[in-house]
Image (cartoon, rainbow, N blue to C red; front, side):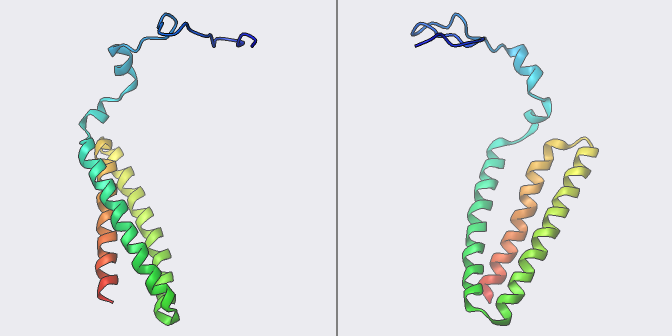
Length: 128
């Protein structure tokens, strides 16, 4: 087999001689201090809950759409309207927080906003 061209080289098994080292200074240059303020566990938990709740809403909406008629047509219109308004509201929230120097809050606020809307849809669809 021919030697690889360019900077890629084969290493002897178990040697780290040619591998670059990641130092603490290099990490500080790359990772913004803003990210240190994020509660990553809460953000992950909220994201997982949003995914689960959204799947419930999808299942409930599919049931409603399968029934057909005026209710299904109204639900289709509502879905499109809600998606646009939620996306625009989330975008403006991000911009407002970034402009205020609170970019570290943007992801959590966005997830929370979507979760509120998804929960409201779930309650509405369960009542119907």
